[in-house]
Length: 73
Image (cartoon, rainbow, N blue to C red):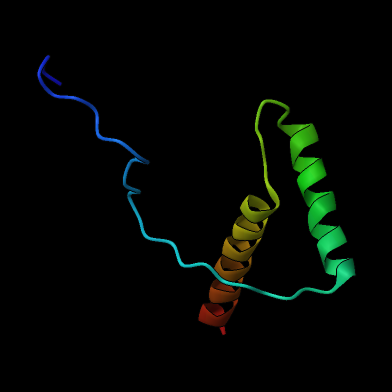
């Protein structure tokens, strides 16, 4: 950035576009997700893991495993 350029205001643009999905989950499933988040934060103390992060990770793992299972049948 040159001396005459000023940083743009607001949030920087994201590299990828994300959709927002609203999902209703039973309380026992939410508790399992929260337990998973707690376990991750204990294993990785410097990392701030949110419920949304955990759900994205669990979905990615589940889809990868399910795709692999379907490809082998």
